[in-house]
Image: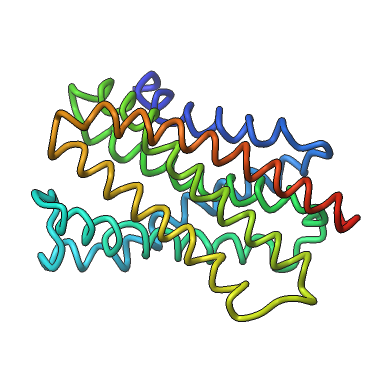
Length: 233
């Protein structure tokens, strides 16, 4: 049992450590893990919205066409999950005095997103029975990096809106939610599509993995450059 739980939890913690280690002035560990815990709560909050749609049959459980893949990806996953994560990120940072650098938004958003990925992993792996190893490896390679990527985008725009409050508009606030939703929906649609056609499966899967890590590198570079240009941490 402990091996199975370790396989489910380790990928999220490793990615969280990776983001945390890139912070020049690391955040308090207790706040980072509080964000991680908030992320686990977000998984249950999102199910309040997605559950009824799945159980009612309004969206299919296992898509067999591209159209169904889009419906499941956006209505069953992207919209409820990213909404729940943003709610938890806001609850975490709304009165947080430690949120004083632009990169902090990436750290705390990653903590929430990876907390979500962690509890989701545990549920999937524990319910997979004898196939737990294959499920844990597949999710470690695709699902966890995906949640990581969505969180990085959310954290970037959350920080941008927070530290550039004098330019804050409705659009600057909406995109904190919208861009992760679009990215999540597109990512899941491609993931589902790869299972519909084996010829594309390997190409799409590899592209998704590479994309997640290049996205983090580019986002980190951009947010540090913006901090330097504005002389604002």
